[in-house]
Image: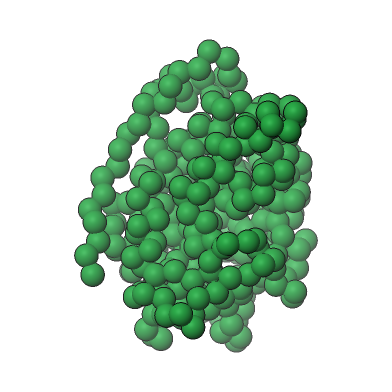
Length: 325
């Protein structure tokens, strides 16, 4: 397998005449870095066989759940950096939520191994994150292995799928270690397609209490907390260590306009980070969807969404914010 060698391109952001102070500072710096903070591991190392192709109508139309390593590398051509992660299953079940993320890899590899293997396709571009279940018996050993041996730089949790209360002792022990080690965490937030997922564990307001108890833990609340955009905005706006990503949001134009308008009216779009949610959507499709929101507003006589705020989300240097540079 041949993987192309990519280099980071620093883009010039056009200056704008009217914007918030935070946006103006970013624009005057003149340097842009497109970072996908939300991409999933490929389900297959080689091509995906027809019988493994999968989708889910509850997630959306024309989405794909399975993808190969080459497809991942190709999809990420439009970004400069990408965080890549799997999701730890519930202890004892071995059953992955939504789809078997390990389906096309050697059985000896777990999701953290696959994240590291994926990042190795272009180590200058891809950044592996680990995933653990706060209640797994070997959590300390796997944490050490993922960070020390695999080079993972952060954590992904989906506590609703994993059925873990974010205020539990097990979760707090993990958050405490991440904070002490200076590692950021991406939380799945918002809706779920799994009937046994506990939605309140993925509500933005639950993350507010976590942020209060762990003020130095850098956190991303994924998917703008959809459909709880107002609550997500309220949380990220008040905490300097908390951001949200827009992954999945542009796929629904009306909901995307709502989310952007809420954040715009509270001068909080500087807390929104770019993410694609690959394999479900590609970075390019996500950029196109974001850039279509201002046009959607004009065509439907809705209050406007400034295009410069859209571009700032796409070009935001999330690595600097998360301490990953």
